[in-house]
Image (cartoon, rainbow, N blue to C red; front, side):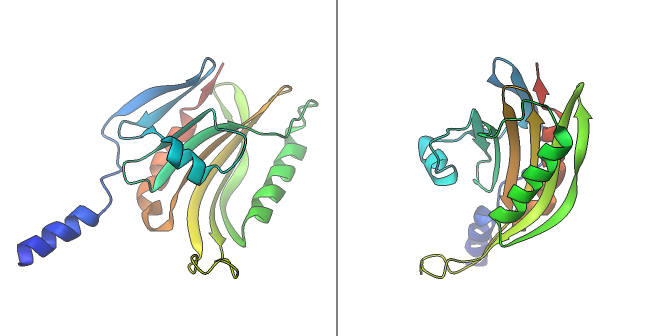
Length: 183
C-alpha cells in the first residue's frame, strides 16, 4: 500500500526540467533559439488557452507538464525611430499594468549577438476574478521577457512558468534567452 502511494505521488511530480540536451529550434527564417530537448510545440488547444488573441505566436513551446512555456511573437507596437529607452519605459508600463502585482527581479537593456534587447524578469500576480466563480485562486508566475526593437517590427521573446517550479526553471529561462539569435 505504501509503495503504491509513493509511486502515485512520484507520478504527480513534474518531470525533471533540467535539460540534459539542448536543441537548436528554428522559429522562422531569421530566428533561432536553443530549447530544452523535452520542449515541444504547443498544440492548437494550448495556443487557444494561452494566447487568446488574433495574433498567433511565431512559435510557442511548452514542457511535458505544461508548467513552463516559451514563445516568440511580433508586437503590434512599432518603434520606427529606434528609441530603445523610450520603448523600454513603454513596455515596462505595459507589464506593470497587465497584472495586479509585479515584483521586478531584473530589467534593462542587454546586448546579445550584436543586437540590443530590452528585458524584464519578474514575478507576477493576477488576482482571482470576482465575477468568475471558477477562478478563486490568484495566478502567480515567473516571467522572463525580451523585446527586440527594429524599425519594421518588435519581436517579443517570453518564458513563463508557474511559481512552484520557478526555482528549477529560472536558470533555464536565462540560458534560453541568451541563446536567442536574430539575423
